Image 1 (spheres, rainbow, N blue to C red):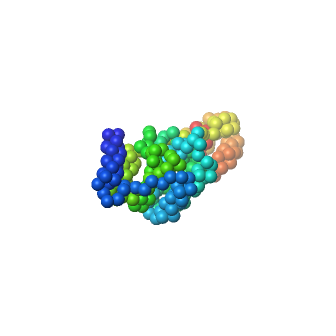
Image 2 (image 1 turned 135 degrees about the vertical axis):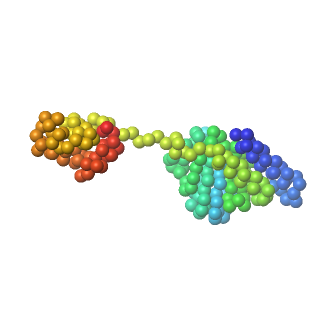
Image 3 (image 1 turned 45 degrees about the vertical axis):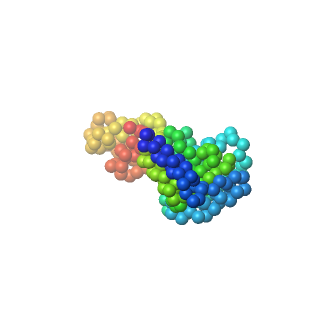
Length: 241
């Protein structure tokens, strides 16, 4: 975490230094919904190789942001992600449900406790950062200064290395209830799993060889297989063991 904080401080220091010492400002502020929308569309159209983001899909919830702006911003993100060869998106954990649902984008996503600021970084050449570090709708800074852009790339790299794979939070699909197995077939399944021959299994279960063979056929039909070898694996998948 200390390394991540240090990288964020490095990015801010580089931005301040570029603004005070350089011959040009570190970035160009963009304000107003129309100009911001045009800038986002331009970023999407210019994306070629890489898209790095810090994003919080739920940050705008409860904020008075017009629906059309949100739709356009989402469309620009999807367009940029589809054009890029590599997409790396870092989001806070509380947004996991959103990235698994309708806001899924091409590329990779990782989770952190909280993002340092919202950011869109295209091809390591230009970055868009909210003026308040939270919402692009409130104004954003388009950063093209190479020193600042490199610092922002480093911040993202450090956070990415420390972030978690969303797969670690995936909830496994529940297995079908065990009572889906017809009760008369339970002893037959147990006999198959025990590796008993048909003759031995029939004798232990107190049924004729013909009846046992018929029950085995019913079990295979219930499992959707004709292979006794695969029967055990299929029974396990259905939660019958």
